[in-house]
Length: 129
Image 1 (cartoon, rainbow, N blue to C red):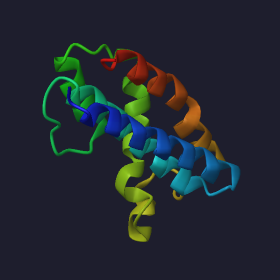
Image 2: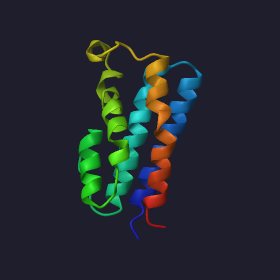
Image 3: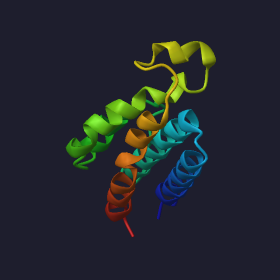
């Protein structure tokens, strides 16, 4: 049995926990980044359970790949689209200007974490045992 999906999920859960810790410490932009990372790795866990993971980071593209593997992710598309903005922009100071509200604050971090647990629960339920 391929162990990579479980490893992707483990890393995803670590990023989720990191995002929650950073949120509690009011480190909003990094909470957003780690929420994005948690979802990216969760999507890669789903994909890896069926085929090789493509080397992409865009959550909507990864969702399309996962849906080709028969995972129904339509309820998460808006969430994925929202998180996409945090992959690069939160890591480079010259890119925060491209965000709609500049550097992410509490409001953006709350939205970034809003559906994270539901998504990770979906991943856990849909991986082979």
